[in-house]
Length: 72
Image 1 (cartoon, one colour):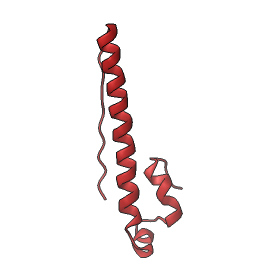
Image 2 (cartoon, helix red, strand yellow; image 1 turned 135 degrees about the vertical axis):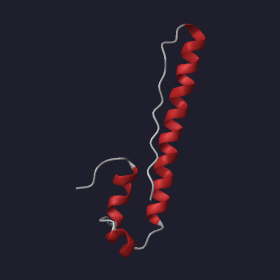
Image 3 (spheres, rainbow, N blue to C red; image 1 turned 180 degrees about the vertical axis):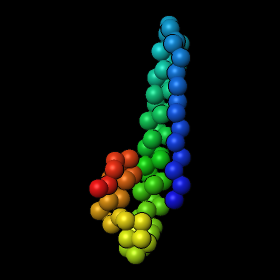
């Protein structure tokens, strides 16, 4: 499984169009985060219990990993 990390930066924007752009960027970022979690959840769910155990996970860990939280 590969991890893909993106960093989205915004520059100081002012005025109505800047705020609309900020809103669009925020919505796009939220969609990207949701889609990344969805894709991760789908891939991990497709693995067998043996494959999950090989990478140190169990089925109950899938949602935690998809949310980007560490599994102890």
